[in-house]
Amino acid sequence: MYTVRVRFAPSPTGTPHIGNIRTALFNWLFARHHGGKFVLRIEDTDRERLVPGSLEAIMDGLRWLGLDWDEGPEMGGPYEPYFQSQRLSTYQAYAEQLVAEGKAYPCYCSKERLEAMREEQKQRGEPAGYDRRCRYLTPRERSEFEAQGVTPVVRFAIPLEGETTYHDLMHGDVTIQNRILDDFVMLKSDGYPTYHFSVVVDDRLMAITHVLRADEWIPSTPRHVMLYQALGWQPPQFAHLPIILGPDRTKLSKRHGATSITAYEEDGYLPEAIVNFLALLGWSYDGVTEIFSRGELVARFDLDRVGTTPAIFAREKLDWMNGYYIRQLPAVDLAARLLPFLQKAGLLPADVGPDLTAYVEAIVPLIRERINLLSEAPQATEYFFREELRYEPGLLVQKGLTPEKTRTILLAARNAIAAQGSCEAARLEETLRPLAVELEVKTGQLFGAIRVAVTGRTATPPLFETIAVLGCQKALARIDEAIAALPG
RNA sequence: GGCGCAUUCGUCUAGCGGCCAAGGACAUCGCCCUCUCAAGGCGAAGAUCGGGGGUUCGAAUCCCCCAUGCGCUACCA
Image 1 (spheres, rainbow, N blue to C red):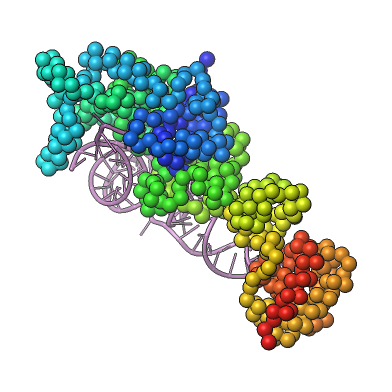
Image 2: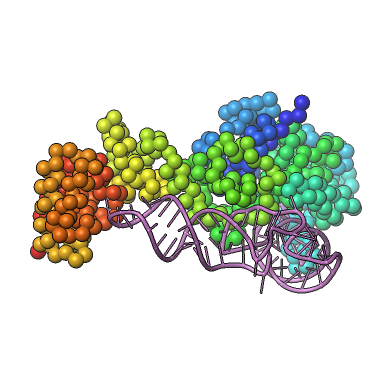
């Protein structure tokens, strides 16, 4: 039986950015859609660039988005280990095999020589690339280097003539002249493999059927294909996904601000919104539908609807989509997701009891369609939690009214609310709306004055609901304070 | 420099020879709703489909050339 097996193979050199995650998403969707396996493999073969903590960041990011892996770190699997740094002997064995067959060779060239060589090539305007000096070393020269104690790298002996073609599911046939390619390093002098080598060995050994990776790998895929051929293996299917660019149209990197996936959680994005949005960066269903649940994505995602154009990652649409998902969330659910943000802002204690939880759940419907990010909640709800309101008293005086008139209407409102036994929104409206007529002011003026008095803001959720949630006790106290603070 | 990939509204995209004087979404602007702000509804503006040659009765869609952008060209991935 044929099972689709794909992998996400990040290298732990920092927190994954949105582009890496998009690649992971497409792999995950592809695997789930085809009922296959999604493998997480860690390509930690560069010991110098290794950044502690990035493995955790990668796994946290994937987990946060719900991209669960079937095999990999913490999960194990039939093709363990899933860390390339733990598979060194495997690569070495295959490298030895290729050397023995004359398809690869040890290279003793020093970094200095290679650098000088490159410099010279550049000056003469020649194509860059290793000049193959060690490919033609005599056995004697070779043993001389060995005697000197030079630790060689192993280079792949590229076929000098002909061309190499591979079929890309995304781009069709891609052909390259063999003479363009230089003898790349397979095994470094520290015994670690380079990407080109380990990716081939592992994809084969881990029975990967489809390699879905970013576009930037297209130029090196022929090398990989040559490696497969040299090892006598059938290459997997390749599909190169368009890369994601920053707003300046260059490859996404740290320079583009907060692009690391962990930042999105802190910024108040919902994982379901990120997944939906990322799916649409390069993939489309019918060009019309924009909102897809995870299940719908799995059901509909496939490579034939993936484009080839690089996409610029712009946040505006993500923000809209995040707001959309926030509005869809049940109040209780949204409240729970909001708690950490309110706590971080110091509006709620670390320990939130049932009363406070109920309070937040009552606030949620009022701000739900007024925030696009969870992180906007503290600023949007601040007056529900603070004891003291701070605002410019002049705000109380509505356009067309004097401070005196404002005092009159606030007092009248105060008394009307106090006289009204219930603090339900509908009751409040019933008593306050006629009051405007009575006082001969516009409803907007009356409500506006009360709004500022009760919240300190000129823009808030509907007044009566706001007072009802806040509680009439508190509202009355705040109106009293406002009257006292009134200018004049 | 060499090689590769890409090129439809500001952005994400639909389009796979006639249904397109190019559709949807975000953002923008206007109107409606309305106690403010949002959300929502309606509408406007916005792409001579990078340019030039072909092929064809007919091209955004196929071919060629050019331009531009990005990527690769490391003992990085």
